[in-house]
Length: 209
View (cartoon, rainbow, N blue to C red):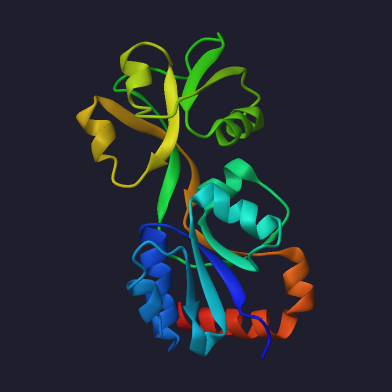
């Protein structure tokens, strides 16, 4: 038997949704449910190993070929980019990137350089470059909603699901930047070397989403 196909999953909600999908395909994910502190878990009847990692690390592991496949949000893919194939939109983990400002603020008025706070500087930069706008991007690690409230930024680019947090902090979405959902990514070499196995799994997944 070939060595197991390794699939890196983003810990948390995407991990749960992916495991539910694998179970829908008929695979026994008992080891993943009973993981304890283990981070590499067998799915023996699929000849697969699940590796649990942070979103950015999923991309790193797939890109470097230590994992054949990965499940990660489109947000991380857009921010990190990288050399791999993005093959399937899994349809769960749906949200969106949006531009938000203080309620009633006229963001597009005037010609001055706008300041944008975000956890996703590359996404924000490319969005405003496409508009031909000069912006200063400030990277924030924590609650990005604070930046306009403290007058650090004119607006924020962030992941929005319901918009409740924005509303509660007196902010509003003024423009959508890009839709986000979970994607299946595959290492470029793995796709060549294990083409039949990976194709078979992808066909199964596509029939069940």
